[in-house]
Image 1 (cartoon, rainbow, N blue to C red):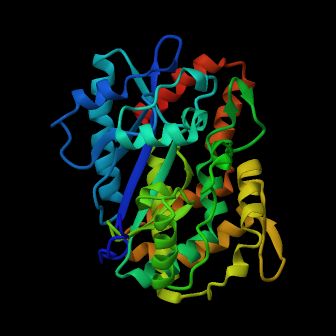
Image 2: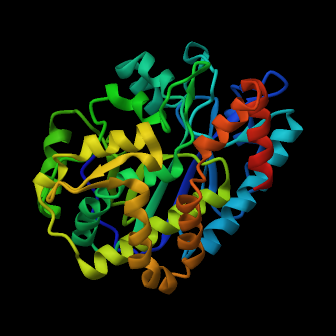
Image 3: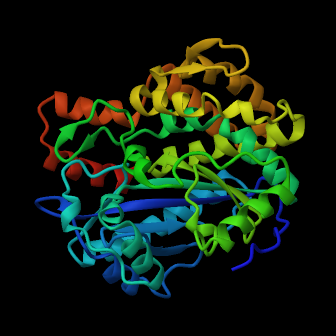
Length: 372
């Protein structure tokens, strides 16, 4: 369908989507019951929504449009309450985390929908392998040109939010040695990575029309870039994060992105250029592989520092913008994560290092999700 006009939304409003794992105790493998839970929750949710993702082992919760992190936390907490009640009634459990540590992709069932049936036909087994779990954050934009600037501005901070959200060290029963292995699953898809560089909205529309006229895409939902404009909602959507183990951390990361957006659009500290993407994949890899200890290389100067070293002074820059957005708590929490090397990946590995089994790890994750 033709690209819709960009809906002008209230700037810096938030929307958060979290893809959750449906767990089947006591073995704590993935269940195949998202349709059952979604049906049971019809009419129960006051704000936001509960919906399918790619496979029946995935359950997505999403806020509505939120003015600030407090409202986002309130909506996600209410969604969690309803989902946990329904899961308990069906002897299921729910947790976060970017990957299930020992599930087999061959067992996954793709959700019954026309869209997913078409993508399964096109991508085959890759669709089942994509039973991994991410956080998406929408930031409202006043107009389409702001959205294009934000698309490029936020791209500089993709490694930062990957490192802050990393929670997927295990796949198929083994430690991958990555802080976030989830993004590797998507590397075989043709639209993986950054959006092609465009200088303005007209150029973006031209690019989209070329893709559509070639029957490569039918809507913006068919483009799974790391960051993409969402004209229908009037937002820019950041899509690279693992689902954290807790709602609290998910909201803090969203507040960090919200403050980044406010600073970027207020100060315009960068003039976007296509050359800025030269090192994009290298920096993204460092974040996935090493988390906050990964090396960030500044594309224009060649200066190198760890992601932790880059985030701390950035937080000082963002603090006044966060204050205006009522997101100071998010910035303070992110500072604590960085200074204390407090990551979900480290938490997961520590549990295993202390003698925990992967089945017990999933039980622990469900306890964490319900309480934090």
